[in-house]
Length: 424
Ligand SMILES: [Fe+2]
Image (tube, rainbow, N blue to C red; front, side, top):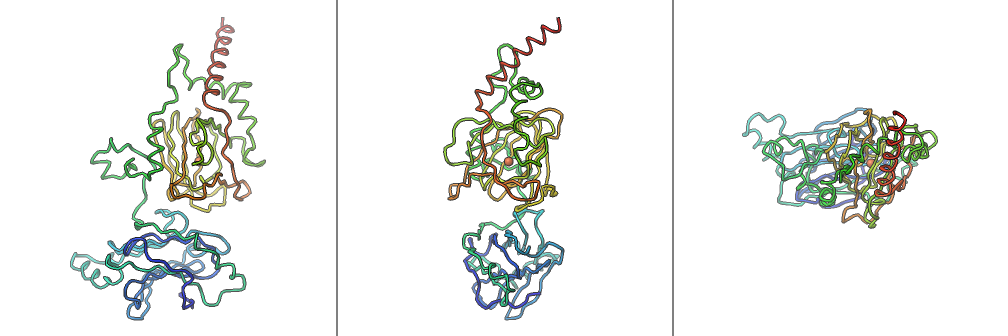
């Protein structure tokens, strides 16, 4: 399946760390392409060849190419006319190759090849390491090259787009998924270190760590009301009572994600503070999700985010990059309940859908900021419409926090008074 590739690479760059990394090409391809890894010996290489509904790992030694493993699963190859992130993980220490599409995660992995898989003893492993040392070592940097087919079809001229901005390298190879749940490192035990059920705050990307530190102690019912009225009760009352502030706003917002969006495809955004220019919209948002309400599938413009559940429970579904189908099956789904904190970065959990699948409302605080290295500061959340198009949503404000709080507490007190009267 290798086909005939150009002698000269379309693109070439040294590895980010000697002999390892994840190399992601966010490109449109209508023909087979190949990613080749060479080390000091230019005669030997490791290749990932991506065809239509096929992908193959191969190795060249002493000028002789041989296939290592391949897949012909539908969807495993290039997606014609679509810009897709094709990623290739190269692990020099464990001698494992991985290829996938979209975000780099277990669920999106299309092909894995482990050079040591057949080795039963450490002696056998040693022999394999020795044999392939020229291709898996920390001594020399290594080169990553992208090759296109020599005779592209008529419409493939547009293939060779400006990919310079569309290539991203990560220093470490892909080993396993990270947990979407955050735990303060101060609470880590030997068990948490061992089971990997949490992302510890000390290991969060710095931008997420900053957000976590700022919101980790927030509470919906602070301060508790002196006359026993809780904000959480007042919010529920306002959502459920015709003519009240939150009820009216939800009615008004019906259809905000397009005329065909569902009646329950709404939630309220209550903003806190001001935009400082380093986030899509205001960085701190109290979101209110009535029972059964949900968001469309959307991403966060490559921003980092931290979400803490303040009240109730929310279901989080995670999707692959470039998801276009509003009814697409999620890669992963889980519930987050009061006190849980989750995180999002450019590379992890960026595309999601939130759904309150309970019978009571849910409140979350969501906060956002861009990486220090982000020079775009994309102001929108991109969401998948009912018509399978990607639309832009400018994160706005339904209320400011203190204004909303004052009004719903007032509503609750007044109406509770009336209810008491009517019961006499
Ligand atoms: Fe979101």
